[in-house]
Amino acid sequence: MRLRGAIAFGVALVAFLVVGIWLGGHPSKLPGFAREAFTEEPTSLVAEASEIIKDNYFRKVGDTELGNASLQGMVRELRKRHADRFSDYFSPESLEGFNQQIEGHFSGVGLSVIEVKKGLQVIKVFKGSPAEAGGVEAGDTIVSVEGKSIAGLDSTESTQMIKGPEGTQVTVGIEKKNGKKSEKTLTRANVVLPNVSSRVFTTDGKKIGYVRLLSFSSEASKQLAHGIEKAKGEGAEGLVLDLRENPGGLLDEAVSSASLFLPEGEVVVSTKSRTKGDTERKSGPGKIVDVPFDVLIDRGTASAAEIMTAALQDDAHATVVGTRSYGKGVFQEEHELANGGALKLTVGEYFTPNGKNLHRTGGIHPEVKVVDNPHTPVDEARQKALETVAAQVEG
Image (spheres, rainbow, N blue to C red):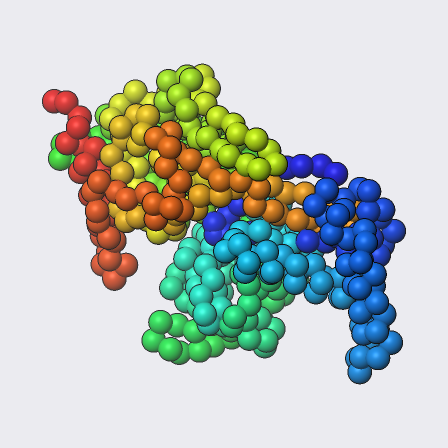
């Protein structure tokens, strides 16, 4: 079994053990906690219930369907009993989609969404995507997929319904802010996540670089470095790092990204885990930011994005601008299973360089509080962040 350390997507994102047994895997190959749970009475009970359902249920039911339901139930119980919103179970199909996003691309329609009661609210529509071509806009709510309501579904399940092979079609039901509803049929495509954008603004007579990072997917730190160098090449005297709506991603990328701003050897994050022990992750070589900078966050800034923000706030005394962050203080580890699926389990807590757990403190609280009004053409939060850095530039 391969372990893959990851701080899960916020948002996002976030137990195939019985299926592994049914499909021929041996319990000895399972993690210790699972081996104890499934090698005695629970295994026989699950097998007995499975056989009863298959023999007597009024619809035909297969092993895979029962296995998925059983494993989802186990993870659901963990989440409920331990107030854990982040442990998750990935089928082989959903695991593929999750890994594609971590790698910075996926086959879908090109949307960034968050889970709401009615379904999925659209936060961002990627340029050149099928969703943009179909007229989907930020602020829309996806309420159905292929005519089936997604209200109340977990975001992992509902987004998986939208994704699919490149070139295939999917029909989504859209509800506008004014309540108007419609259906749109979109042709899925390979969507490359536009992870970093960079430009330079002139604010109060100073050239201020503005770099936005959307997630800590694979290669994020290299992409961020390129964006920073681009802004510096255009004469930036200060820098705004925008981590709004950044749900996190890979811990290694967060540490490498923080290293672009910090001297080598600074503590970026520490972790405590019952099973993994206690660790400290420090910044590496490669600092390239030598101008005043601040960090722009909001309620969608989570996980690895919070780790980086806290490190820059604690170690470099960077000013944080915006609204409070999500407040995720635990980390997950992905355990691949024999049938191609995986468990994403919460395995420990993480702490900022100053020793704070962000779940307990309710996230990161900005020194400069500002809320963007989505109904105005001006991005008020970005403007305030630019002004805050400009005030620190000499001359």
